[in-house]
Image (cartoon, rainbow over all chains, first blue to last red):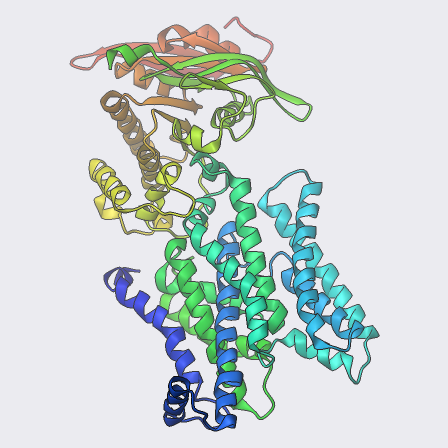
Length: 337
Length: 282
């Protein structure tokens, strides 16, 4: 923290530049070779209105760029929601899927894959069931007639496990040659279906949620003091908590419905942020977004490069994130806890 | 300031509160005036904290009224309350390691819009208070690594930054050693004198009431027990052997000593516990 105080601006700049630099580099990475000259040609074509090699154009504009944009949005959304939930529930082991969003969305996606032949139904189903899971959590919390954080957490555990059981049920019922693999792959997470249409529709809740959290981020510090103190500091605890949950849920559901369940980002990326810049949510929330975005772009690059068939992201995030997290733990000796 | 002297800041009229069916207190009437120390005494579990929570608006009264600065309502918004009263908790759970500065800035919440965060003037206020306490070196320290005494001082500083006429404290010196206890009391006495702050405190130590009286600060004591609150006047009048026997079931001696240059000092010395049956008569 000491050295950070001295180089505060430098660190912010570095972290903010990270997703941009990685995103720009990622255009050149992949099985189809793209060189710097191609980008020049692309820019010239865009300026002059003249055509360029359609394959090149398509790879850059319709394959790589949407993936990079989607990766940044999904990674950022998951990371800010996770950071917000950790602050809200005053528990560092909480992730963006805390209130059952991921399991709900997974169930919705599996259901859509079984019920319909067309893939497009997966998005609304995943999104809708993700939201439904959170609403159910609230009702379970309501049963105890309190809005305490712990009943919500408990609700999240219950709803999460019910939806996990339902996912297993659907897997059991699914056609093993066609539907089952689709469900399994969806659950492991991927950005391979990135298209501008999806980015646009799923991007709205992701951006809305992330911006909402960005706006209210300082109040997470107040809520981290506990309900009594937050109240006596002048905060309407229930209203603020609901606002944060709605934002985090929108962001997470938007991310999960296009990319499937990508674990780890919503749990550990916020901690990487905490280790580098501390727990002040005013700084942490934007930093978590940038780091989440950078992390997922990087992981997606590796997933594309590592094998001819893309490795599911859920596997890679943990395999890569784990060792890096251990390194951070060693470097900082966990002093931010 | 003199005209303000007797202004009532907090008033409870016919207040009652219960947790479900279990009544905590009823028919509570009390008045807290500017610049005084209001000392709430009572045995464990008598509901002191609940009464304080009702003042702070964490619980809403079942019946009766709570007037803050002359505004009488059944319910005050948290923001409104936080501009009248700042709260120093008895026990603070530390979950995240914030810097002392970040923690102090939380005191500015009632003056910060929901989309904003404290700015430069707020940081300057925090710096000033740290300077006043002679603790500027703590500014960038991780507050979870502070000692119990330092934490309590930081909490008091946070309450001061809230710039309220009233500070509410629940057991201000629990977990503190002898020296730090005295340091906190000294700090509070100084703040009350210099800034006309009103202090509401629930405490287990009747001697705290004497401490402020000895320091020449107007103090009012109220005993809580049997679901009621009994305002009993100044410590010299309230903290008698009879009252202590009645509310705490203990035998005590009140010692008065005149120290050169310090005036008269009063303290209670506990002697022994009494059976519950011997109510009223020591």
